Image (cartoon, rainbow, N blue to C red; front, top):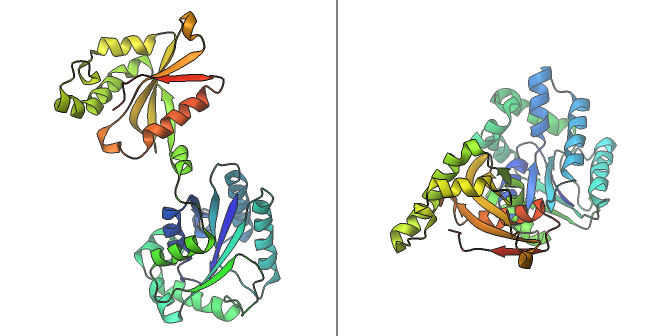
Length: 316
């Protein structure tokens, strides 16, 4: 798995650039304050040891996912050997999987960073920055206490770039990074992590039926097909739900039920071992997002031993 380390001084735009980069790649964002803020909220103060432990747990768990990589933001004090050692330890976790580590350093004029310290996005995601006077004083103190910008040629890594984003929009910077390192586009992995299947219970048949009608009704109004699932009886839907050789699953995305898929096993001798996806639909407002394709991949995962799959024309 790959790792992108976004480094730079306070309020240089690491998190915001990371957010934009996540939109256009198959990478997730883990910005530094996602661990800092909960620790401050719970303990009432900054606790570096707890934050570091939580970070390690996140890294270890994320390395078990199917994403291409992770974007990690960090304010690197180049005059502190402990920071060099820490970044090395994180990089080694990802390199051990065969992944590549990319380093992106952002720099911007102080006046610009002072203004960025007040932006809505920063204050929304970083509660500890909401007292502007204190957070600005802390930011300036950090600069005088540590060297937060690398010297020319100091960073030895092959996959490294420094960007002056003083006058650049975050989306522009994200695109520069994506192109420079030829990062993977947003792909099926993203949807695979967002979509799940939940078996339909008998007491949920009415909801299933209502969703089926909603999903197929636009097509029925257009073509008036008398075999349309939009005008099928609830009794027929119930019969498929309770049959022994088949199962219905709700398609769930981000916790919301967005559609359903019916899986059937044919019991005739000529089709022994053959499974059918006999119905699949997605509610109109969720269509054209690739959800049905991902749902089918989820079905295949549920039945890894099935060798032959066939499809019946009951899809919207």
